[in-house]
Length: 462
Image (cartoon, rainbow, N blue to C red):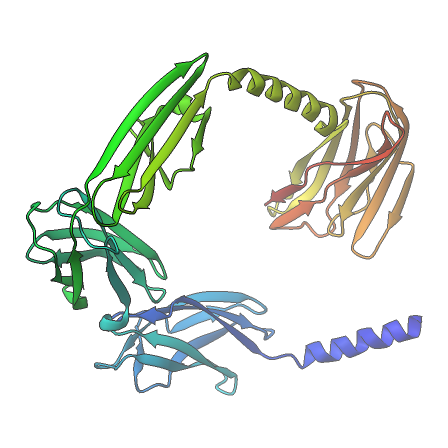
């Protein structure tokens, strides 16, 4: 078995010797662009050689060029460098998907190179987004305020800032400006009020959407104006012992379908104890409280009733519930044993880590604990502990990349604390980041069941 392990290690070492001299990984930052926009990529370039080398980026593509300023860069032996590159199209390229051919090559040894294809999607302005106007399916009622909605959808991962939307017909005009993120769908709602004598018809409505003086949408939709419905609304409030009931009733006495919106505003306190029948379609926080709205259709002769009950008897039950939750959370969720690790560092003259002092605080928060088995790990960068200031370990063992220290504590009384402290020396004057792992403790709790507690992990820097 030992000979087999040695053979495997030998084969792995051979593979490492013949590893590539350079590795390149592309990261898309903005690969979907509009005409005239630059595409952005990050290249992670790893120098696998045993010496520092200078590399350059060359674009072998008739349609795209590399923006100057980031073509040459030095990378140390065995290190990785990330470079942000910007590519711009040559001339007026038609929309489509382009594979930009990029070569990363060593300036000292041209035989060391790597080819990459960066995929860029060029999207035409007229194909970037979609727009749709929505109204009541039965048409706009000229006798009341009507909700009109414009639905915008970004088809690609392209952000648009300050899109101008213009909606116009012979009855109304609406303009607004909005932002639309990549692959986002957004709706803009507005209220339309017409002359009650507006004739029923399908009206041509122009939808014009522009961005930076470029036209995204320019088309004509139809908006229907229908006959109005005679809808009557009544609202009543009834108070009983700590209960307020609000009833909103709407009756359609007209001759056509009516798309209705009913609303009610409640305070933040009332919101805690309210019940709805039916549930609202939408909730919005306003300066006056919370506005609830219901959207529904009323057929001719149909009545719709909304019942809202605010029950102030609930706080008593809510308070009892909170007390019970706190009690059981404390009883079952609070950890019996708390461990906290603190690390003090001693730096060398060269700025590295000369040694560390580890302080492990152990405290019993509950009833008496038994058979505490505490395990702590020492990273391979540090030597084995050479000095124990408080409690000496029960056992110690060295593993491949770490050392393991074990303390056995037979019993820890309620509220009792223990401090475990030891010193470690650095093997090489370690520089940079060093992580001291968590300590763990397995013990028997008051119910004689095994439990586990962990300390925090500590990361130190030089």
